[in-house]
Amino acid sequence: MKTYIEERAIRTGQYIIETKATVRQAADKFGVSKSTVHKDVTSRLSKINPALAMEARKVLDVNKQERHIRGGMATKEKYMHTV
Image 1 (cartoon, rainbow, N blue to C red):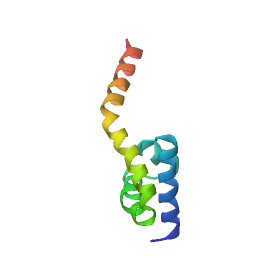
Image 2: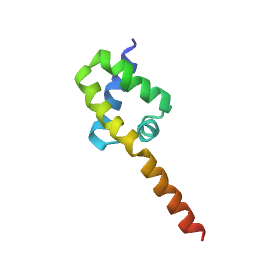
Image 3: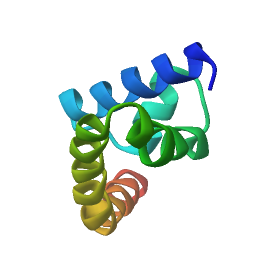
Image 4: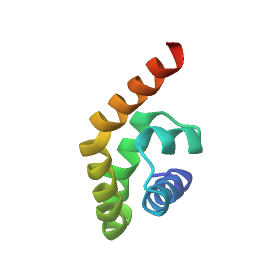
């Protein structure tokens, strides 16, 4: 694996842990796709730094459990401004 990919995976994992960021937020921050962030955190990072990968995965799991709530709140906010 190329070193810049390893460095990006580590930076992405650290960013997700520090800010409790979603995959989408991390993708915007690093200028990559959501698929790349997911691959970095789940596959690549587990080979580079398993402890960091596990911590980042915990944050992503919590975000996944809460995503339906955030979606509902966004929809509510959208329609409150259009009425």
